Image 1: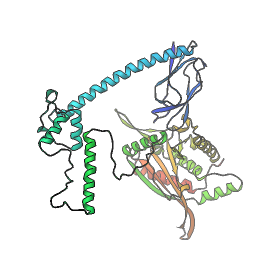
Image 2 (image 1 turned 135 degrees about the vertical axis):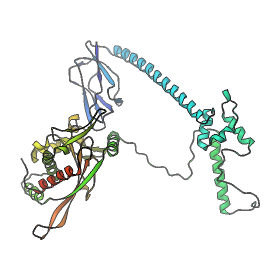
Image 3 (image 1 turned 60 degrees about the horizontal axis):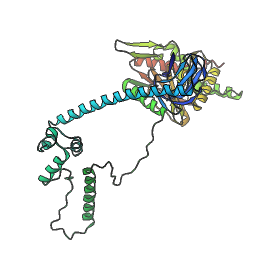
Image 4 (image 1 turned 60 degrees about the vertical axis):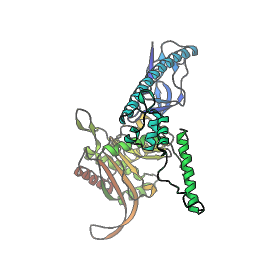
Length: 453
């Protein structure tokens, strides 16, 4: 009796992971919830725990292998096994996988054969694969192919039929008709233009020769080779998720300017006594307070086959976008509305440090209900961000700029101003709901009512 341990789905967007390290060897004693291995997902390094107690019977993947979600990675049994037993078990599993893969390959080949026949009948003719490829390459029409008599099985047109027809017509189908060289009355022409034409014709004839011989080569004349940068897991996940959000979520944006005078005074006072609080910490607490007053902004839109609905989150969890060398990650500060500024500072610094060392856990990166993205440190005046689905809103914070402001008593003062843009999911809320949230957020930021400790 053995228990299969599968790679769990450790995040909403997780599809696969790379095995980084095994913590147990075959035959080792294993306790329930003991760490068996470490895997790297598109966001962080996570631990895979044992689902039962016993002995590790086998290891179906090696360090460095990429494993799909829900794939069995090992087995835990009641009796200790030897390395030989494990090898035999793995051999049986490999044989079963080979049989299954052979069956899948056969189905794909049958499907390909069916698609090929369908493509031949598209022209109303039977074409060999080589002719079909050539016809597609040269852009031959159905009427042109109908002129060719097939000599293959069941009158299929083969490559030699195409070439023979071309010779009989004294007009090669492979010729680039845009290129011509009139040799009459120009035997003594030696201008650069004539040489260029001859060179061009020789190159094109060389290309056609390569096509005729069906050599799997590529000729590049004067082409510039560009650098190709393969996406790592984090960038791949970000690309897929934000593409889906931008495509599927109707988003609208509200822009507001906010006066940071009160926050600046508080920060300077705390700094003088050795307490450093970043602007992000103030925005996290302010957003949490505003979300308490605007529950729809803290909700998310849910769509199923049966119904559409809006689900309100019971917790207020603020995600903070963090830029790493290998991509963007959004660690989440849970129950931010219950934390003081000092507690937010501690939690934020802890999460950022874990993100930079690639040690974020599943708990650290899931459950967000609202996201803040701050590019102020890059001297960005303002920007808009894409909603971090399934959340309903994201706040984009720009840099602080000193600007002249007309006060209520018509005086002009220089104050630290900041522009923020918020993107909202229009399926969850309307413009009036979003506007009220932004109004409440500005009032909180511009006040001196902060829970510091």
